[in-house]
Structures are given as structure tokens and as C-alpha cells.
Length: 66
Image (cartoon, rainbow, N blue to C red; front, side, top):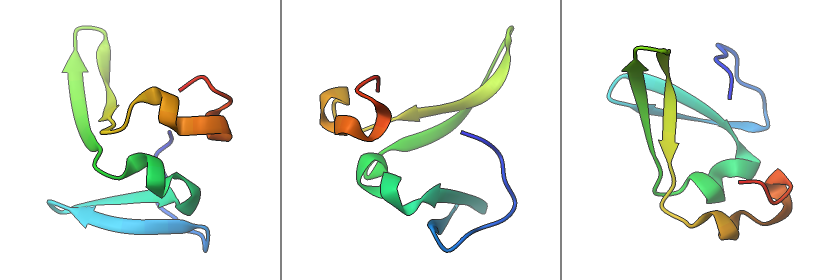
């Protein structure tokens, strides 16, 4: 995952609580029902994605390593 300010034709845009989220259209089925949080810890901060679907449902889109 990267931070990007531009959107391509292959992306979707969703605005949640004033935050714009851009994702590749191919990932939408995997992100359905997911939550995205920004977490800060002593080691730094970052985004945490909790999916509603079990990892086994991700298929070949991530090489089976989801």
C-alpha cells in the first residue's frame, strides 16, 4: 500500500470521514467490509487493514500469501 494523490481509470475513490481512499478496482471484492485504521506505536505509525473475509478467500490475486 502506498500513499498517492492521483487516481487512474483503474481506481475507485471513496471518501470516509473526510479522508479520501483510493484503491485498485481489482481489490474491491477483497476490501468489502474491511476497516482501515491508522495506528501509532513506539516503532512508528502505519495503516492497518482488517478484512471481513478470511485470508483463504483472497485466491491468486496476492499469490496465496494474504
